[in-house]
Length: 337
Picture 1 (cartoon, helix red, strand yellow):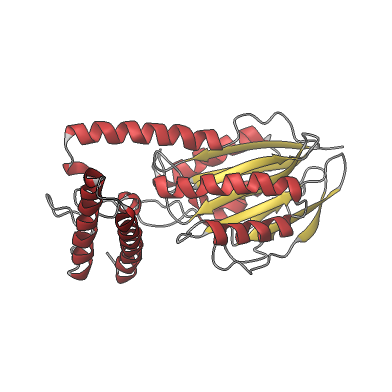
Picture 2 (tube, rainbow, N blue to C red):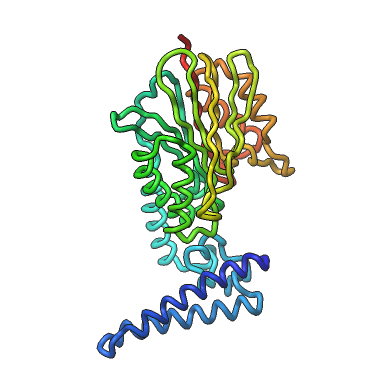
């Protein structure tokens, strides 16, 4: 474990220690059972802090292998890896992960019937039971979809999923009040910095869609997310790059908004880095250029077929059916006149 990792967990442990000491001082003598529980938790935290000092933190006390990082993010006093826990603990963990997975899937759009003027497809695949990717189709007061959002947190598993649930709640409330994607992302960043202790930042892209046939204007803001790829009907390609930093760094950050024209037949591909950073055994990644070439070659396909073929292409490239990182793709195509 790196020095930066150890400092990260030290911060988490010290914060928890302070909160528990504050709670312990508030307990009355009649609540002796609860007092003993808190003291036990404090003892576990002190032990974990000692392990940080002697650089044994994160090492399984049974097999001496590493304790899974994502489990330490949730409970940093863990001393046993998954391979060494008891069958009873394994059963409890599997049940918890099943519930968390169901909650995570419920956060994603369950059914999107239509977006005026567009064909579309979307899919999100988690590397673990709970993923850190998020996407959404946001409606205006009339019920029409006017915004598309894709986001990725630095991390995977339950901590990333919890952060994304906070993001979704704030986003859906703010989107009803703020039409401009630049202003919306700026307000969302302010809210996250003020209300969520973010130590793993979020990248996010937001599109504001103009309905109707023919050429339309699209406005977007990109908070440190993968560039949005546009491929015209003729095969010309263009990237919509970042208009600001990732979310959660500083509450005063502001995010620019840009406008582009979309013509009939134009294809937009929004994705997380689980696509471009998917790697095969020799560590070569799928990469931006391979993705762009695929999009140009298959731009005429319907979005559903395009998306299925892209995922198959990434799997074929890596030689794996599963993914090492969360992978999310949204495909939007302007309908011909």
